[in-house]
Image (cartoon, rainbow, N blue to C red; front, side, top):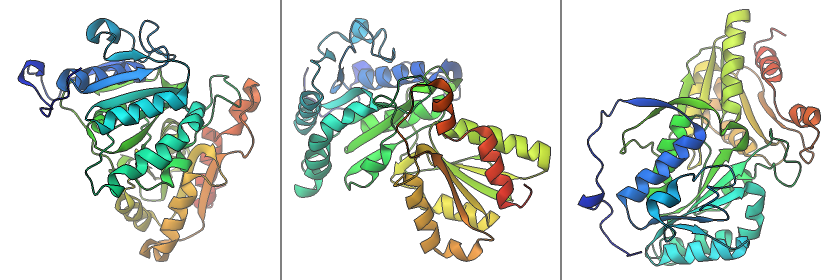
Amino acid sequence: MNITKDKSPASAKSPAVDSGATKLMSVRDAIIMAMSEEMRRDENVFLMGEDVGIFGGDFGTSVGMLEEFGKERIRDTPISENAISGCAIGAAMTGLRPIVDVAFMDFIVYMMDNIVNQAAKTRYMFGGKGQVPTVFRCAAGSGVGSAAQHSQSLEAWFTHIPGIKVVAPGTPADVKGLLKTAIRDNNTVIFLEYKAQYNMRGEVPVDPEFTIPLGKADIKREGKDVTVVTYGRMLERVIQAADEVKEANGVSVEVVDLRTLMPLDKEAILTSVKKTGKVLLVNDAHKTGGFIGEVAAMIAESEAFDFLDGRILRLAGEDVPVPYNATLEAAMIPTVERIKKYILKLVDKR
């Protein structure tokens, strides 16, 4: 693997395609497409992690990549998260651009010292000269029966650390566009992929240059009565709830999909809150210390507070370890019915 300053060698350029063309595919396939396109574009990009090669990744997110890119760029690693993160960060410091398949997000606890005390701070401490362009892809959340030690969403931990970017897309198209941008970014990025949504399908742009900037929220539904702010796995449920309360109750819900938690698109949130005067915040991570608490505080401290017609409401996962029992697991996180109930509570149509 050669270190090169040319990020788009002529030999790696893809043939021209219709920039508006899309293809129906799963989140899993969107991940493979994004990584493959970036590896063709830049020979410094490589994938590393446990079982990413012949096995194709614990969740099938690198199937077929070993055959195209070879074992030098699709690197199977020992079962040692501390070693994996240390090698990735060291490689990034020397000019490469590693993508780390963390597999279950829970395993990132073994990487915390390297990520928090080394990767996050190096660029700042060396005045921008010590860049650490590393993407840590994390299979997050519940919904597949993986129990308490393999089902956590730990994004709030990383949003607390300056120097780390945190991305949590909720659609296949956003997964592709944001993952490509994360790979090109010169900072450390924590990229959440929700296990329960690897099979989710949607239209995805096939243009190799399709990217989505970090730090830009997206209005997935426009509305005038209530703002619901969410991200990741909960986006699908929030959209369903918004559509159902509009049809059944005539309530117009604006859905703000954060997509990126750090950097946070504060302007998009505050603009929507000023517009509707009512806000519900939804995520599947635990409520206490969860990221939506930071969003609530930001709204309360801003000029948008004066536009509110009621309380800021939060709806999140219960403060218990994720159960293995399927019924208990499903009850732990916000359902479409609970989201609808909270929306109607805000407009006093319970």
